[in-house]
Image (tube, rainbow, N blue to C red; front, side, top):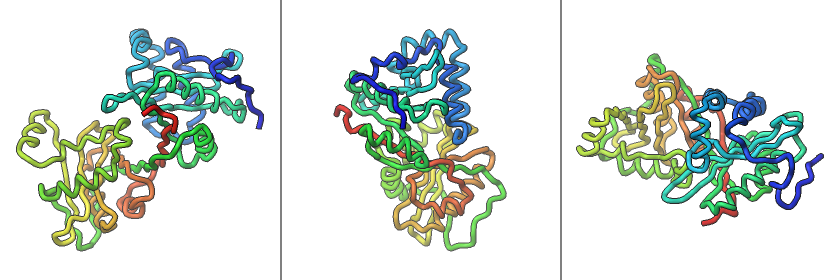
Length: 327
């Protein structure tokens, strides 16, 4: 494999420089779209469109130059140029969680005509150098499980796998009908909450809550919580899947935005697959006015039950943390 010779500090290479948010966003958007067009979902397409739009918005650009190290947006990063053309990129997205600074390295890309030259490694190494200089608490990235080359690169650079999660999608469907089983779907009872909460803590671990906060406080039973939800006009819907008097699974829907809605499925290792399938079908029927339901779940868990409910897997991401992060 032909590689680019790098000095001891990658930042010294003349083709490698920091992202200039005032002028680079459209070209970076083009590169990301080119590199990931085969796997880009609607959220990714919206992200690229937003990047292009931001690149034309002078007021946003001037704000971005001041907020690049604090806003949870890809306003910082490193690019690789060849003859004035951006052919490599690594974005840096800052987060704050429980008083700690965390960075996500994202959009690592190399133009197809310049692959296997070490560009992806160079921009990722420079991004790691950036986070080390700032002594952040943790540096993360995620990679699709069907990209073994990238996975090997990140492993070689000191990243360690922390989780694998699959995204599932289905449409709301008023015609969805429950299978004939001994499973009963009921409204979530207050007595189900302790078990539901334990399952949620396992399935949506705190280790990843810096990226997508798992705030399940809205699901707690009680008059005070009901009054608060009524005050903020939040209509939370919850169901339980029962076999006799035994809770098999619970599902909650917290309104977010109409085009993307995330049901929160809670189940244990001993839960009946039929109970999960029935619960998800019931959710599709009850939320039939929503164009898309997106379920985030640990990879490899209850896959047959989720598919049987009409959900399709869109991707599985491997979440990796750099072993050299400052604790």
